Amino acid sequence: MKRLSIIIPCYNEEDTIPLFFASVEKIGKTMPVELEYCFVNDGSNDQTLSVLRDLHKNYPAKVHYLDFSRNFGKEAALYAGLKEATGDYVVIMDADLQDPPELLPEMLRLVEEEDYDCVGTRRDDREGEPKIRSFFAKLFYKIINRISSTQLIEGARDYRLMTGKMVAAVLEVTEYNRFSKGILSWVGFKTTYLSYKNRARVAGESSWSFWSLFKYSLEAIVNFSEAPLAIASFIGFFSCLAAILGLFVIVIRTIFYGDPTSGWPSMVCILLLIGGLQLFCLGIVGRYIGKIFLETKNRPLYIVKEKDKE
Image (cartoon, rainbow, N blue to C red; front, side):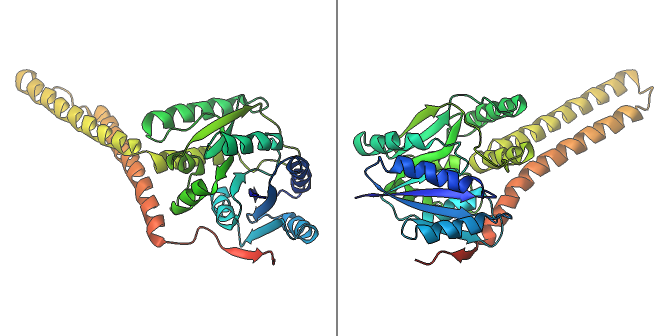
């Protein structure tokens, strides 16, 4: 019997893990595969680790866990889980049951019978989500798909089932600055998507705030597009062109009409404008240089503090 490894990144999920495990086990009994659970505790500050220890104690053959030394972020947790997975197929899921377990049989069927390398999922709607967050999420997908050669499916989730061949390709992308949705699209392979209605968490609260999602979207743009650098170049070019034209007009006016006014207020405004544009462009360039700096440090993506003993 083939094995399906389930990667579950966890951050303060003590209430959701038992519910998640029970729901997936119920679906797993109807599937022709052996399930393997790979929980990754990403520096939780509640009782998540204790719950995982108990779960492993009760199911030592199928439940495994990693405990990070601190919170390294979901991207690191996903990478760690993929490295630990031993299954013929691998699926990424969240512990909050916003990823419907009942889609698993169809996802497995599509991979085995329709020759897909990956079956992803996407939300049809964002019901229950604040409207301002939905607006910016749609705006993000429009922007990233215009400026990047790596196209992202709007509403796509990390929840997807992959073959071992695709997982191996993802693990070859060892960059420190990671954006999994982009990496999973960038590696290619034959992929299809299943749609479903948005679901609320079964328990607990999401650790994703609007600000953290905004920073995450900026990471995606910088990681998968050079458009911000091009924008900075265009701003510099047109600012220089405007300055040359302005100097030309001033010289002509002075020669023919004299210069009756000192114009210091307008000069101050112009200096502030040019200075602001320079700082803006330097900020964009600095963002990319910062990414290079982190990559050259070659630090590990995560540090494991505890691992279950088989």
